[in-house]
Image 1 (spheres, rainbow, N blue to C red):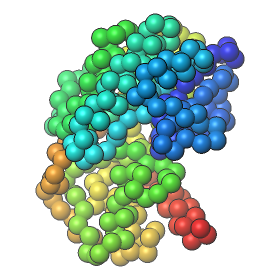
Image 2: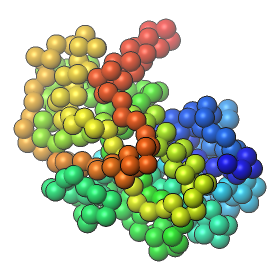
Image 3: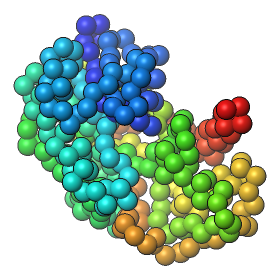
Length: 304
């Protein structure tokens, strides 16, 4: 890889963005730069992606050959409540980045979601028909579509529910379950929707490998999937996490019907064989990984 090639990571202060930045810090051979906004500090440059002039100036300064666009509004409930802000970040910003990449000959890696599917016909291949059920999924699909209208020098990576090294329990929908368990018991947890919790470190590795592949092969582009390979409902995840937190699993009630509020698909299992065929990635064990994460989180909270 040409050491002068620069990779830009948007959303570098978020759950996934931090993991990508860490992976690149330890294993990437080229130059890279991360940007964030509300939590930007240290090596992460502060940049408001909604500021078109500021983004264009940043692009001109850094001349990124590769752009990993991980910044997004990722919470379905927030997206439903504030659709205009969600659209601005998930669609308008994405379109602007795609146009800048097209103008400058840069490759764009867009992080999308399994929620572009309705969950009725898993497992899903990258070319399968999309049909999102909620506004979050619709906005992410619209982001995919605006990229494809602008140019073809892109990759779209769809991933499912993410977890990893958190700054607080609410940062991931997985560890948010622990907040429910730490509240008033008994806790009711969804036992209807099947999810595939995926560690952000595993997704970060995939992102780096995709950039490296694109650096070696200019024809590497298209839509890809990556996912953990262990199915869990929220209730089943809760039963894994409860003993780690000293909570009795008998205090958790399984609810067999869909959760009220924002509609969510039942099973959006993503088929990851396309990237697996390139010998990309890893898929770590959820029980082992979440135990390590929660124990470290507890230790940090006790020492702070």
